[in-house]
Length: 109
Length: 79
Image 1 (spheres, each protein chain N blue to C red):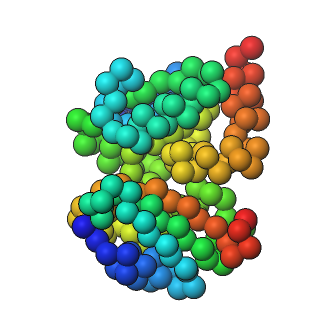
Image 2 (image 1 turned 180 degrees about the vertical axis):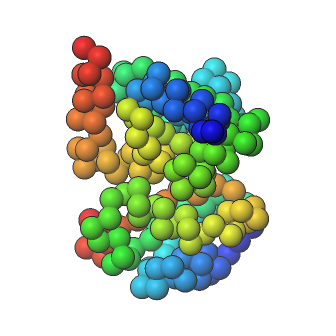
């Protein structure tokens, strides 16, 4: 029987092209890195979703196992894991990020 | 609270040739910026480079000596 939490995550990944798992909510972020990540994506103008896992240790543990990445926030683009702004920043400066986002949202157009 | 020397030791256990620069972002020595230069990063994308560093620093992250990490991972030729 598949893990219900993992299924919940898979569902969320399907619904949101850009998905940030972090501490706090969009309107009340509770961690500097979470704010930084949202501001990072504000540059591009694409919609993104923030899911608060601060009070959900089981989901945090599942996400950590799924991604082999110990910290929050965790960013997914088009269902694929990309770490956080420490990873997305260098990807942006290497010109890898813009095409990725365009491709993710092109499927919708 | 952790010292730059201890951080370097942990990183060098996994990345033996690593040059490590640790800077304290908030004055409490647990919100750190860690810059790592190593040959082992050659051919690895940014995500996998950071995974290596997180594996090396797993223990101090788990026991709270490190609270937050900002990482930079480059090869000696700066790529």
